[in-house]
Image 1 (cartoon, rainbow, N blue to C red):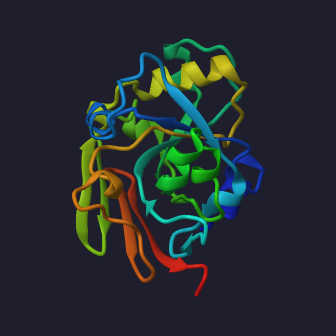
Image 2: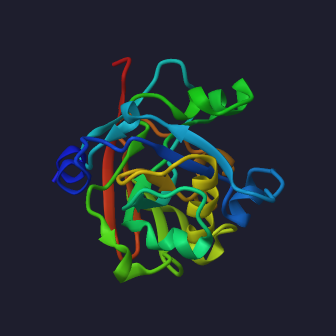
Length: 227
């Protein structure tokens, strides 16, 4: 099934109303980025224009010089929730899937905020398969991997999350009402291309895989929009 088919079947809407993302939520990734570990979740957002299905292309925008993939566990909300405690928050989770938080690094850091660098069309591939929360609980202990052309770049575990899923859902619900079908991207492990030596950027013809243990593999190819 596609994203739209799954979301219409489960949540009676073609796409998530909100895609809430969490930055620097793995200590090793914060360290490789030379950022301090946040004392509360660092939130930003993507919009529906960023969504693409497995097998569709990630497009490299002409404005960007370095585009990265980020492997992430994504949490899908199952019922309306507001100002929840961590215990209440997990009860509102429908399940989990895999996401790729594609990022134009030069724009993300050059702009001083992340709206443009994270918001281009095709910058949020999402696996439509959702594993119920009853199978994965709070989403702890799951391996999260990014492969670029078959080579492993990221290989982490959700045990290393600074803020776990119940904490994130509760925190976000204190900011905004969460509705069925809303998605929270929980952050990415260390190993992204921008912070490697030498740096590794996505290029035309690349294939990116995001694998979340117990969930599945999200696979997309990369195209240069200028070609």
